[in-house]
Length: 375
Ligand code: IPM
Ligand code: MN
Image (cartoon, rainbow, N blue to C red; front, side):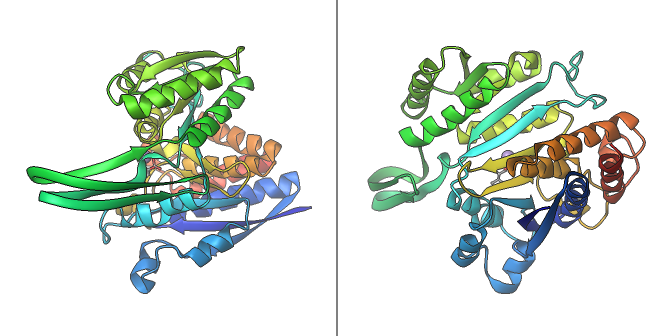
C-alpha cells in the first residue's frame, strides 16, 4: 500500500470544519484505491499568531518543503488587521514554495444552479491558469509625503531578484505607490504550463492582459504569449483585455478552454468564474510547483461568521482534496471523488444551505464519502 504524509493547515474560521470533511473523503478514497494518508496537522492561523506571534516561520516552511503537497483550509480572522495573515501565511507560502501556477477549474457540475441563463454543464467547463508569484502581488511599494524622499524596494525569488532605488519628489500632500513586476522566466513558465494543459484538452489558450493601458508590464506579457504560442502551432489562441473577458465569461463561457492570466487579473476573474460554476462553495484551487511542494485549498475565505456552526458547504475543499491526490498521481481516486461530488449533487438529498438544503457540513462530507465507498 502506498503511504503518503500530507501536512494540513486547516487555518481560521470554517477552515477546520471543511478540512475535516476533505480528510474524511480522501481517507475513504485511499481505502478503496489502495493508499494511506497520514495527515500532519499544523496550527498556523489566527489563534496561533495571537498566542505566539508566529505567522509562519522559516523553520516551518523548510520542514513543509519536504512534502509534495499541503492541504490548506482557509486563512483570515476579524481580530487581526486585513492582510496580515493572508500575506504572512498564504502568500508567504505561495512564494516560498515557488508555486507559480494557481490552477482554478471553472466547471459547472450537472444539477448545480448557475446565474447564467440558458447555460448548462457542457457550456461552463474551462481552467484558469493564474500566474501566482509576480505582478502586483510581489508586495513592494510605499507611501511618500510632500517633499523629497528615498525608498529601496527589493524582490527576492529563487528564479531572480530585482532592486528598485527610488528618488521621490512630490508636491502632493501624500502619495501611495505599488510596483508590479513580471519576469521573462516567470511569464514563460506559466504559459508553457497553460499550453501543455491545452494540448491535453480542447487545444485553445486565451490570454488575459491590459496591454492597451498598462503596456509596459502587460505588453511584455502579450509578447511572451505570442512567443510561446508560436512553439505550439496546433493550439488556437486569442488575447482578451481583462475588462472584456469578464463580459465573455458571462456571455460565452463555452468559448474558453484554458485561460492564462497574470496574478491580479486572475484573482479577480476567478471569483467571477466561481460564481458561474455555482458559487464559492463549489470552487477549488491548486497552488502548484510541478517540481516542488504544491498546496491545495478552496478558493473561498474563512467565513468567520459561520465558524463552528457546521453549516457551510465543504464541496470546494473536498474537490481541492481530489486535486491534491491527483497531483500525487492518484488519478483514479481523484476522479472517483469528483464523481461522488457530482452524484451527491444529482441526488439532491444531502446539501448545505447555499444549495437550497438544510444539511450540515459533516452530513455532506459523510454522503460524499459514502458515494466514494459505494461508487
Ligand atoms: C485568493 C485570495 C488571495 C489572493 C488572498 C487571500 C491573498 O483572494 O486565493 O484568490 O488574493 O490570491
Ligand atoms: Mn481571490
